[in-house]
Image: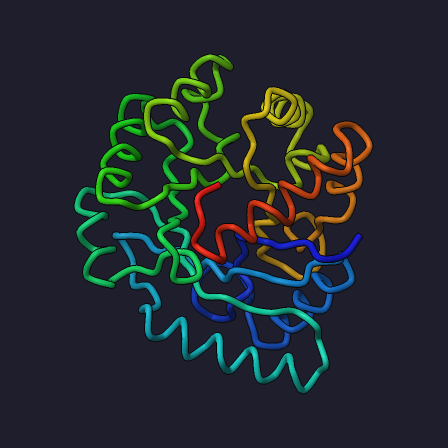
Amino acid sequence: MNGLIDIHSHILPLVDDGAESVEMALLMLKKAAEEGIEKIILTPHQKPDRRCVTPEGILRRMEELRELAGKEKIPVQLYPGNEIFYRHGLAELLDKGKIRTMADSRYVLIEFLPGEDYTYIRDALSRVASFGYRPITAHVERYVNVMSRIDKAEELKEDTGCYFQVNAASMTGENGFSVKNMTRKLLKEGLVDFIATDAHRSEGKRSPDMKACAEWVKKKLGEERMEQIFCGNPTALLKDQII
């Protein structure tokens, strides 16, 4: 199981609640490579209520990590991004280059509070899309008012044109039985566009594990669907192509 692409990770060290050191970041990259992940978008948190790494800082730190990974002969390519907590004026901040898109594409990874109102999420994603960006809803399985009914999830995608990303750990059951059932139902209904690690640590529950999830998708839905989610769609993102 090789050639996988992870679009959501917190491997960039010392910038958020992810990798706590350069050494941990390198261990995370090694683990990712062992899992068959060949490309990773670094998506540190971007929140309005705290000091966050700048777009320029992400590039600088990414180059430093890339150089160290090269010395360790870790075969993983890195790309810059952000996991953006939605706030009013976000589209304007993106236009001004104050926040990073995904790998310099028109795709943006957006998160909300788990209990956020459905209408607020819908209107937020619609506004971002109206500026020509392609919003990806980060770990959509967390938003109870979207996931309460499958038709609400379908409606959100239809109304906003957004994409859904779920975490691999949710698919494999590490985040609980009900979350596992919910994400698998989304997948079987054809609503999942990306599965990512959302990795924060080198070991344990939030490590960059992807292989087991990819193998499960291949077994249940076939190799073509697995390739689309873990390789095809992420490749289109990196090329700034519409999925």
